[in-house]
Length: 179
Image 1 (spheres, rainbow, N blue to C red):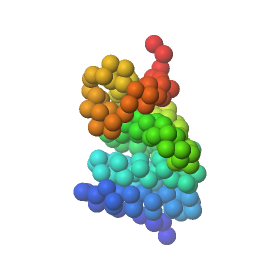
Image 2 (image 1 turned 120 degrees about the horizontal axis):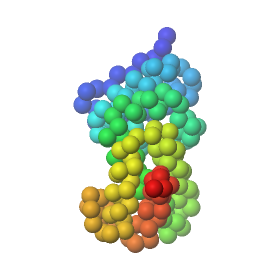
Image 3 (image 1 turned 180 degrees about the horizontal axis):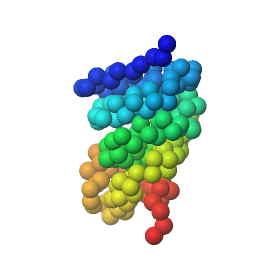
């Protein structure tokens, strides 16, 4: 019998993490049809808590699925392009900034994990091909350079210094097409 995944309408962040962990285990065991995977992910990314819980679990997972997103994962994420694009752009920035912090603290294991999250995020962004990502990436890159704009509060809240902002801008250039 095929497992099903029901996402509560007001899923909490911890519930979303737990649901995503279960989903990934079932995906790894090949217990789920592609449509079940797509529907579960689409249900998770309907809300900010669900989407945040999905990404924090999926992008940091040790399971190989996160390195090569299936069409079901991609299609599920495309269900809420505005929220997904915003979170992916922020995840790229945060994982890039944290990789530097971990290297400074001489925690190479955590630095490698942050770099893996960054690489996975770039791969997802390229697979999803959401037009919103380009605009948001450009806006975030502009904020890292000018110290102003839509993402300035985000950068300040996380305390990114000049080196981290430069690295974030460089990471964003991996997904902003040449014009």
